[in-house]
Amino acid sequence: MAIPNAIYSGLIRLHILHHASREPIFGLGIIEELGRHGYRLSAGTLYPLLHGLEREGYLRSFEKRNGRHARRLYKATPKGRKSLRDAKTKVRELFAELFENE
Image (cartoon, rainbow, N blue to C red; front, side):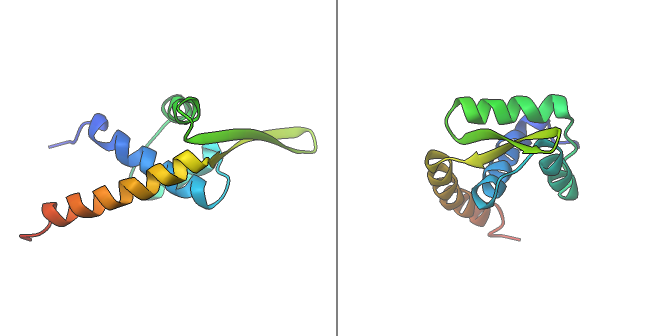
Protein backbone atom coordinates (compact mmCIF):
# COMPACT_ATOMS: atom_id res chain seq x y z
CA MET A 1 0.00 0.00 0.00
CA ALA A 2 1.44 3.35 -1.02
CA ILE A 3 1.29 6.12 1.53
CA PRO A 4 -0.21 9.36 0.15
CA ASN A 5 2.11 12.36 -0.24
CA ALA A 6 -0.08 14.33 2.17
CA ILE A 7 1.14 12.04 4.98
CA TYR A 8 4.77 12.85 4.15
CA SER A 9 4.40 16.61 3.62
CA GLY A 10 4.83 17.45 7.31
CA LEU A 11 7.91 15.22 7.53
CA ILE A 12 9.37 16.91 4.47
CA ARG A 13 8.80 20.34 5.99
CA LEU A 14 10.53 19.22 9.20
CA HIS A 15 13.43 17.83 7.18
CA ILE A 16 13.74 21.18 5.37
CA LEU A 17 13.69 23.08 8.66
CA HIS A 18 16.27 20.69 10.12
CA HIS A 19 18.76 21.40 7.35
CA ALA A 20 17.93 25.10 7.08
CA SER A 21 18.59 25.50 10.81
CA ARG A 22 22.10 24.08 10.36
CA GLU A 23 23.15 26.00 7.25
CA PRO A 24 21.63 27.81 4.28
CA ILE A 25 19.99 25.44 1.81
CA PHE A 26 19.03 25.78 -1.86
CA GLY A 27 16.39 24.08 -3.95
CA LEU A 28 18.39 21.51 -5.91
CA GLY A 29 20.53 20.67 -2.87
CA ILE A 30 17.51 19.91 -0.69
CA ILE A 31 15.84 17.94 -3.51
CA GLU A 32 18.97 15.75 -3.62
CA GLU A 33 19.09 15.46 0.19
CA LEU A 34 15.44 14.44 0.38
CA GLY A 35 16.07 11.98 -2.47
CA ARG A 36 18.69 10.23 -0.33
CA HIS A 37 15.87 9.54 2.13
CA GLY A 38 13.48 8.18 -0.48
CA TYR A 39 11.48 11.33 -1.19
CA ARG A 40 11.17 12.19 -4.87
CA LEU A 41 10.26 15.84 -5.17
CA SER A 42 10.22 17.96 -8.27
CA ALA A 43 11.07 21.65 -8.28
CA GLY A 44 7.36 22.27 -8.87
CA THR A 45 6.61 20.61 -5.54
CA LEU A 46 9.58 21.84 -3.50
CA TYR A 47 9.56 25.55 -4.32
CA PRO A 48 5.94 26.10 -3.24
CA LEU A 49 6.89 24.38 0.07
CA LEU A 50 9.89 26.67 0.50
CA HIS A 51 7.85 29.76 -0.40
CA GLY A 52 5.09 28.73 1.99
CA LEU A 53 7.57 28.19 4.84
CA GLU A 54 9.04 31.60 4.09
CA ARG A 55 5.63 33.27 3.88
CA GLU A 56 4.72 31.75 7.27
CA GLY A 57 7.96 33.08 8.81
CA TYR A 58 9.83 29.78 9.27
CA LEU A 59 12.45 30.47 6.58
CA ARG A 60 14.16 33.57 5.26
CA SER A 61 15.65 33.65 1.78
CA PHE A 62 18.44 35.68 0.29
CA GLU A 63 20.32 35.74 -2.96
CA LYS A 64 23.98 34.77 -3.17
CA ARG A 65 25.94 35.69 -6.27
CA ASN A 66 28.82 33.69 -7.66
CA GLY A 67 30.07 35.67 -10.62
CA ARG A 68 27.24 35.90 -13.14
CA HIS A 69 25.19 33.21 -11.41
CA ALA A 70 22.88 33.78 -8.48
CA ARG A 71 21.36 31.24 -6.15
CA ARG A 72 18.47 31.72 -3.72
CA LEU A 73 19.37 30.34 -0.30
CA TYR A 74 17.01 29.64 2.59
CA LYS A 75 17.87 29.79 6.29
CA ALA A 76 15.63 28.98 9.26
CA THR A 77 14.39 31.98 11.22
CA PRO A 78 14.22 32.03 15.02
CA LYS A 79 10.53 31.07 14.65
CA GLY A 80 11.53 28.17 12.38
CA ARG A 81 14.20 26.91 14.80
CA LYS A 82 11.78 27.10 17.75
CA SER A 83 9.09 25.28 15.78
CA LEU A 84 11.60 22.58 14.86
CA ARG A 85 12.59 22.12 18.53
CA ASP A 86 8.92 21.87 19.52
CA ALA A 87 8.20 19.43 16.68
CA LYS A 88 11.12 17.19 17.68
CA THR A 89 9.55 16.71 21.09
CA LYS A 90 6.21 15.77 19.52
CA VAL A 91 7.83 13.49 16.93
CA ARG A 92 9.83 11.62 19.59
CA GLU A 93 6.66 11.05 21.61
CA LEU A 94 4.67 9.94 18.56
CA PHE A 95 7.36 7.60 17.23
CA ALA A 96 7.88 6.07 20.67
CA GLU A 97 4.19 5.21 20.70
CA LEU A 98 4.20 3.96 17.10
CA PHE A 99 7.09 1.57 17.76
CA GLU A 100 6.55 0.61 21.40
CA ASN A 101 5.23 -2.91 20.66
CA GLU A 102 7.64 -3.82 17.87
